Amino acid sequence: MPRHIGFLAILSLCFGPAALLAQNTPTAEPAATVNGEAIPKVALDRALNRLPEEQRPKARGEILDFLIDNVIVDQYLGQMKINIEAKEVQARIDEMKEELKKSGGDQTLEKLLQSLSLTEAEFREQIGHDLRWERFALQQSTDANLKALFDKHLDMFDGSRVRARHILIGAGSDEKSQGAAIAELAQLKKQIEATTAQALAKLPATADALAREQGRGKAIEEAFASVAREKSICPSKRDGGDVNWFPRAGSMVEAFAKAAFTLKPYEMSEPIKTQFGYHLILVTGRKPGQEVKFDDVKEAVREIYCNQLREAICNKYRPEAKIVIGK
Image (cartoon, rainbow, N blue to C red; front, side, top):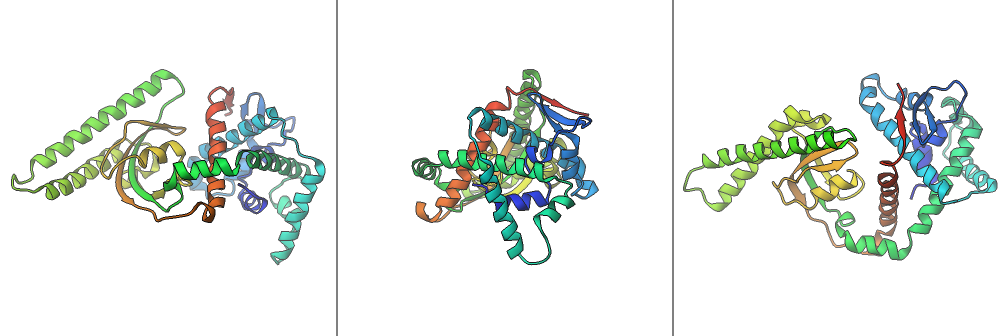
């Protein structure tokens, strides 16, 4: 569950939640509105200006998505009437100031906010939102809920890893474009399977089962990588769609990771939907985990539980939210 040390790190990158960055001014041009609530363009610019210029085009959409999700979560917490008092906000700010003092140097919270062009009022508002989320998340992350998550998804906590390639096809929010993306991936899957079968047909008739299995693995990975380079819209296309090794939670979005961990090596998924579009996934390796006890990883379980809680809120309420992207 996020604490203020993590928030300070996020703040230093200007990736803080929308309420921090979205103090409205009468002339502010919105980067987006969510159910009528504006995210001023300055919110997006603050984050982008912290990045090298060549990274900004790709990062723009990701940062805006992050800000939109934060507003959606914020609005949900408002509906849940999770309230925070001013003295709680002040106590958190005092803790931050003390920690900055202990860290050495001449950095102060005031200087940090000044360097980011943030007012104290904006900052206090954001602390309130952070505390509100923490309170809600703490209410939900009971020992019973955490233990249930641990027992059901042991591979999230035992160090299991998979390696995968993927092909990403973009899709709009309408059924027609989504159907087209699914159909395209289904066709690409057939193409990869056909290319793999052709490669296997060239193996010697005397090849044993192990040699054929190894040949199939090599052939399907080469075929998949070739199609990924040509068709995928993800930057990983330059590596044939390879996203390297990743754990069950904390690295990939839940839908992607969940699908990947159900696959055997050199098995392809059906089209998988995420907020980025539709994916075809090929798992190319698995590393099993080790025995682990709940009490030893309880805080890691809590963190993943809260991340999934936030993602679930966004997945439920974002599709029905009225989101207007600015120019």
